[in-house]
Image (cartoon, rainbow, N blue to C red; front, side):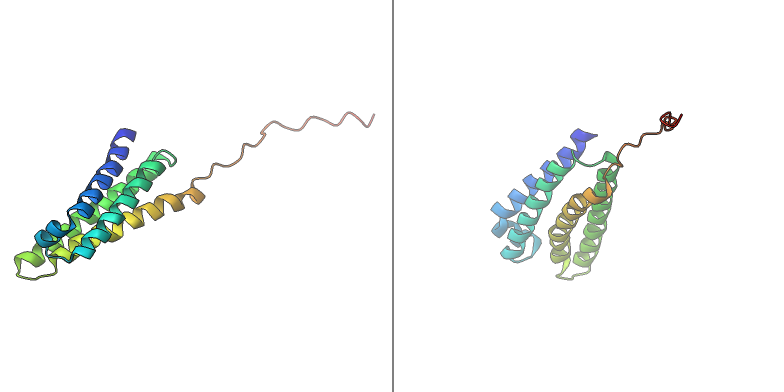
Length: 136
């Protein structure tokens, strides 16, 4: 599972690099301005990089829940974008690329913020106290 979680972060980094490098061409394909593709690429690079680093520092259950929520959001945003595009709207690209701009940063913030909730309690001595033998 760890390899899959790291692979998810690496995929975001590669996708972010592709968005940043091909921003002019991809902007035309998605029907969005070049600057939005560059910002989406930067967000994916940052989010994916943080995911790769923090996936090893957080419980796998926390990482999986966050990645599942991210992927469900991606499916929903893509479906909405497709419906808008099929109906002749021009905002489909903005919806899809907008999600890919905001969601990786939110995922990264939640992974970093999970540090406060993932703190392990300190070990407590559960042995009963020794009897006091000094008062005889």
